[in-house]
Length: 129
Image (cartoon, rainbow, N blue to C red; front, side, top):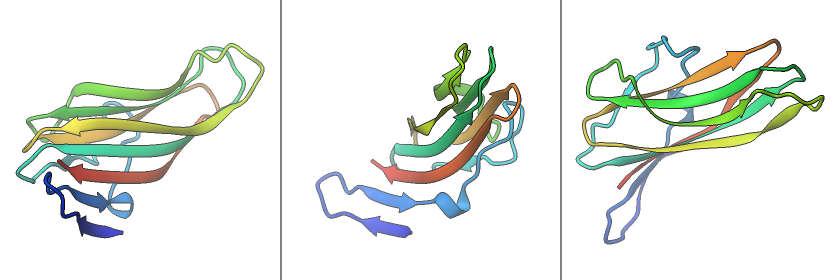
């Protein structure tokens, strides 16, 4: 946890921010918004455990949104399960990876439909490029 500076030609800065970041409950939730305050673009990697029990037309997704204001609304990436039509419980780790330009804001939110779906934050990394 904390910052680590790598000595390479890219001057990459890596930070494990799991403890200080959280998922927004729904698409219209702007409670947890973060800004890239570095002088370069930032790679964000969020890993979550997703569990979707049996039921047709369920969804269990996480989505990243970025923007130039503190209410970022431009969806840039998503991952998860949607439209489970089988009698099998779907449960696995999923990673969401996206770029946040210098000065931009970002947030990650859940999209859960159906009964019993869960998403648990597992890892959250920021890498200044």
